[in-house]
Length: 210
Image (cartoon, rainbow, N blue to C red; front, side, top):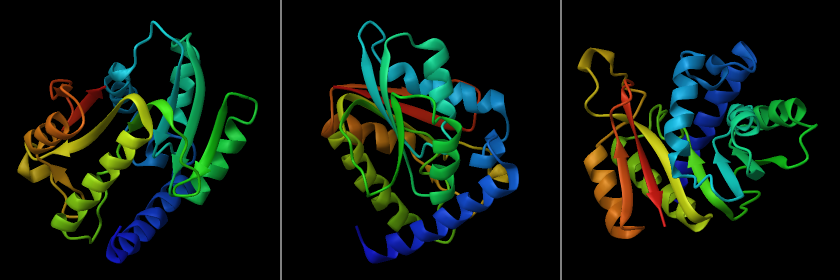
């Protein structure tokens, strides 16, 4: 990964650490507006999972572990969870919150790369800050390669969409072309790819099943 990307990720790490300090273990603490939107995103991302069988999951950009709460309450065959984040403060908060859950662990990005049945990335491509869009897109490509490597059965991710209303757009956020990423995933990772752009948020989810 290029050095300039690492610099930008350091800035992103600081951004999210400020969020968790300011808002705590809440959707705003991971830069989402509310609980409804956070839960809706999780449900779209989890469409990658075959719930008929026991499964393990990598949660890339785990924050304080909100996805884990949903897995515990609603997915009976969930058996192992690895939370991964760039923010030390997120990892500390998540580890403290979920220390009683033996089948869950939290790790700093690039320090631990477990292979699991599924890999999920929620919101990890949104905050580019001052990074040029073309460089950020290459970072997305690199990360999708990594998600593919870390998943045995499939992976899913979401992005803000270029079809958002122009007056809502923010220069420090990245708005992806869903067709470009769908085409990439279809050609590079699997024939079984779904593009979900119909759940009422200014974003899309791509589900890749191997």
